[in-house]
Amino acid sequence: MSVYYQNGPEITKITRRGLNSLSMLISRKQYRISAAQLTDKFAWADIYRAWIMACVDYMWFMEHGDPEKEAPQEEQVRMAKLFLEGAEESRCHEFLNRYREMLTRPHYPNVGSSAAAEKICSEIHGKMAGAPIWLCMRVTAVCLLTNSPPEVIFSEGLKWPGALLGPTIAAKYESGVIDVREGLLFELEPGAVSGPGMKLAPRTLRNKYNKVCSVIIRYKGIEHLVKIPPYGFLRAVFSEGSCVRLVSLKGAISCCDAGSAILQKGDDQGSRLFYAHRSGGASRLVGMPLIGPFWDAAADERSGVTGAVVLTAGELYSTVDPGRKISEGDKAPLPIRCYRSGSQWGWLYDDGVFVSNLSGGRDMEGVTAVAEEAGRGLLICRQGQFLDYRSNVERQITEGEFVQAMLGRFLQAGQDECEALSTQFMRWAILDSGEVRQ
Image (cartoon, helix red, strand yellow):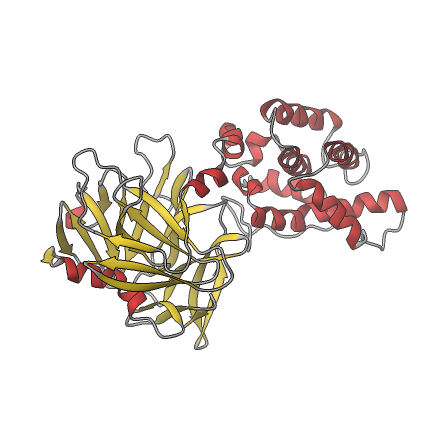
């Protein structure tokens, strides 16, 4: 995984001979990072390797006096553990005192003054009272190394504490997860409507084991097997919070018109998002930079560049279109699912409102289910009627046709495949092993 500045390029590694280069770069370019990245294990691992390891090396040099030697691996591991859950508080404070003293030396590296460091630490201490020490360590280490107050270095500005200390993102994410087991059955009723006060319930069907798992989707008495790869997941929507009636099931592959796709995948560390494209006849996956757990994603495209719309606990944003962004607390609430197929896109809200570019871009009400049909367009269920927009005109279809379009990627997959999606440009498949095949 790569970590990027919110308004700039990929974060690159510094050396112990260039500790002061980072603060100068931040000041000159006014780069910012998201505070939420500090709560994500993947993003933090990259930040630690890129920035903090060089500091540990220099602290080792200061104590042992050998400019040619880096800190031993066991020392790096010991220091890295101070930034993880379960770290001993007294050792963390000891490290931060040495770290701060090292960065504010009057000679090299001279990243910042003692007064500036004191002000930074005081602000962090006041705003993060009661926070776990390992998280305070991460924030303090980054702010001191960049010689920046948190509201300056973090893209959230004055709202940075909320990105770290608001409702626990991981806990909120887990509350929306259903851990599946072999043979778990779901009744599919895409036309289920709860009335004017309906509240659709998004859930993630997760396979937390290292082998493929098959769930049963029963529609009108017929049972269909849908496989979820090791550590994989699928995005579902139920008609109500008790999750009795499944109204839609969304695949893990999404694409626009180009020969590329966005894939939601999992591993034993959590959910990941990948950009997939063809390279020399072979498929290639590139991890997309994220700022923590995400609720859903869909392909997005602007000026021929493929990216993704990503839905998180606090916002929906596009990696290629800055205009596509909704933050929690804005006048509009956040959607529960985002969809893209070909040139058609849409966002579904829990009250059945569907914001899309369908039907002249008019918001629709009473939408309970949405299906992506490869790269050919979207289909929806609105107020019990099933509508096909794949030809860019509204055409009424049967419920069976809608279900076939929604489940086709699972039911038409090969024997060793969990899901397959084909367009005129490409074919992508997620295998029983969790690997991806073109």
